[in-house]
Length: 287
Length: 173
Picture 1 (cartoon, rainbow over the protein chains, first blue to last red):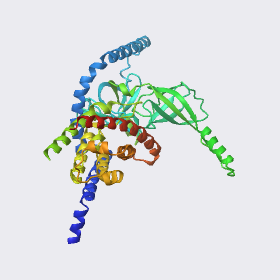
Picture 2: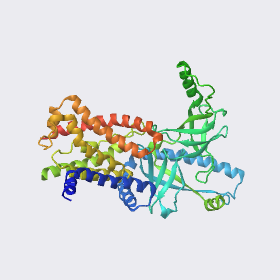
Picture 3: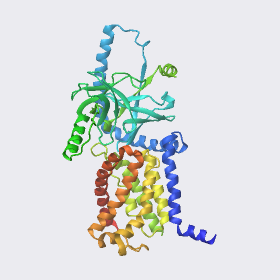
Picture 4: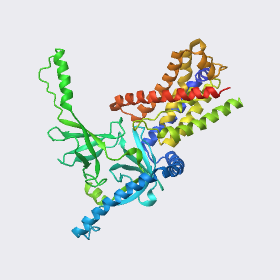
């Protein structure tokens, strides 16, 4: 017994370290798996309050830019409205599948691997998980957690985000992911090599889910990396080193496409929440 | 004792505000933020006992987490660096290291060689960033990305932390 107590006294630093470590690790995993733990609700509400106050102060410096963006968008919407009136689609409300709401970004991170935005609307305004968020220029993210007054949005700059997208010109579908190293580029994977994609092609949402409607702008193709080239270099390396591999063919028939985002994630202020009106129906049929 | 407590408390508040309000919005090349909050760990008085150092570092990381929406990440990284600091110090400063803590940071800076300073700052920052980013990504798929980000953020943090430490020494009596 005496030895045991001696041991504890001798190793008290290490013991305290592991005690605190286990507490902090449990915090990480709790917030990852159980989003509605009490601590995160507390932290969100206190931090959000400060962020909102600070953001209100900061907002004045951006007013000019926000104004011009809104004016541009108004112009664009007016043109669309004109088209609609000419087509006489007066019953468009009956067919509406998606409903839009505006919200303000009160905090926005860019520097971690799992970036989140906080917006100033929540359960009170009818927001739920898995609603899409867009800006006037393109997509921003998906809601992953809501409290009474605020919602947290999983940004497209998050290594866990996967978004269904397609190339506008050729209609090839792919998955959009982030590599974690650039604030303005995403990677579009799973597009076969036979697709004739060119630099400058527009990428839009695919419409395979009810999170985003089809045809929302994402970005343009800025670079195409053919996997074949990479394999050629490996093959050359092996030949040069006289490694004889009899019948191994290097087959990777998918392209890696670098997509430059339209949305400037650094300068987000007003965003729109997309609510799907047929969500319940869609869920039922999916069962 | 009271004065040490006051100094630590002042730095705590000052560095949290500096990090949260200014450096978290730095975003060099879009996504890189320097972690100037590490100055708190780097310059923490050596005199205090290790347990209180770890508890304070834990509280420091936790406060940072509350404001950056990343519960537990900064806490774990700060706590581990605080735990390892005395080993790193005795390894790098060798006989010069003074566990009783009668020396001020000023003495450490003026009496150690250039390579010792670089090693001390670098090792603390690199360990902190590596733990922070690998816990954040939490998958082997992203190992190269984690390394890449650790190195670039290390260069940024290193520059800003050293600058701030030199400014602090100028004010220290």
